[in-house]
Amino acid sequence: MLVDTVAGPEAVAVARDPDDLLALLAATPRAIAVLGLAETEPSGLDVVRRVLADAPGTAVLVAGSGEAHAPAQQALAEGAAGFLRWEAPRAMIRTLVRSLASTAAGDDLVPRPAVPSARGSVEAVASPEEGLHDVVVDLDAQRRLELSVREVQVLIGVSRGLTNADIGRRLYLSDHTVKSHTGHLFRKLGASDRAQAVSHAWRLGLFVPAPTRRAGA
Image (tube, rainbow, N blue to C red; front, side):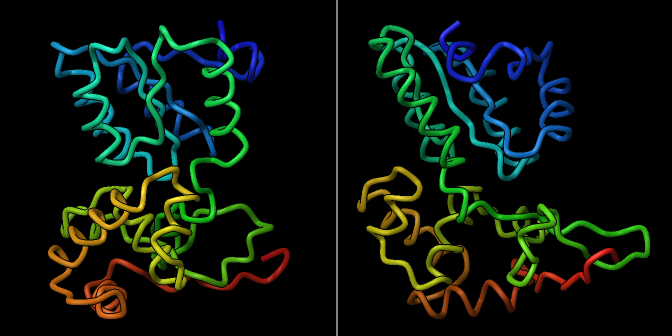
């Protein structure tokens, strides 16, 4: 009901199961997925991981009681955007949902996946107004390198010359958490510093130049 009051009931859809949820997310760009977690039920965290892997760019908000703190922390470490506690004050819940809705969980750091077009070339998934003059992310390379969505977001921030503090503000993460993600990136990419991490990401095929489209093409 609280989500309805923020987004409006016509903007909220309830999925029957994980497959239905992913189908809804595929048809709804810039969506927020609210996923329930329980302390003793591992399937909720499995669904969170599946959404983060299969629906890049979706802002995932995990929800549950304070007893679900451990799985919620794991979900946040793997890329969820926030933890909504059912017993939290209503004003806090509204603020969290509105914050996600207005910022899309670090929208400027959300990776756009590269997908094959009907002609066999690579095209970018993005809105027409975005211009497509930067990069997109190869999902096969992301899976091969075992990078989480959050790690890719941090790497995009690194590639744009943002400091850990800048990245943290955009993704609602502490400097310590961003530093931890950066360390994981260095290890997975075989890099020793930020510049090398970005260079290796290109060399390993994670980043793909986004093609430029002419108006009306």
